[in-house]
Each structure stands twice: as C-alpha cells, then as structure tokens.
Image (cartoon, rainbow, N blue to C red; front, side, top):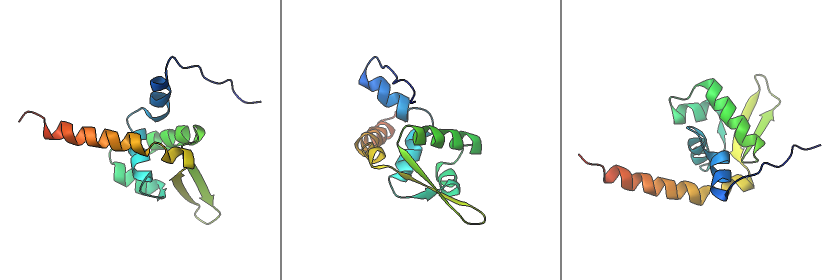
Length: 109
C-alpha cells in the first residue's frame, strides 16, 4: 500500500518541497553534469556533512529525482545519477544560475 498523496496549496510549494533546502539544488546541479560517486559530490559541494548529504540524497531518491546504484564490489561502489524525471529540473536550475550570476554582478561594492 502506498502512502497517501501529499496535498499542496500551489505548484510552487510542490517544487520547493522536492528541491528546496540548502544542498538539494547543488546536488541536482552537479548530477546534471553526469553520474557521481558520494565522495565526488561531497568534494564538489564542499561544506556539506556526510550525514546531510546522505539525507538529502535519500530524499531526492524517494521523490524520484535521483537514482542510486550499488555495485556488488568490495568495498561497495555507489553511484548517483538523475532519473529522467530529475533531468526535467534542468531549466529551473539554469534559471537559478542565471539569476545568481546577475545578483553577484549587481551587488553594491
């Protein structure tokens, strides 16, 4: 039996629920560049704790945004990639990137 579907006030709330937070947009941004291992993501993001990154990846996986693949090796290798649905967030991240670049360029000196 699946969990009841969450009710949202508006579509923006649904988007923020899935990709909001301090690290999720960065995780998605870096995975748009291709499959990454946990350590690669942690190094790219910088400042994120192992626990926070693990929790955020689990939430993104539960929402169908990230795919987690475990390879049966010793030690186990785990790779993260975006699902087809996850890649549909690319235009949102690109708009955020452009806005951020404009914001940085227009800050008072």
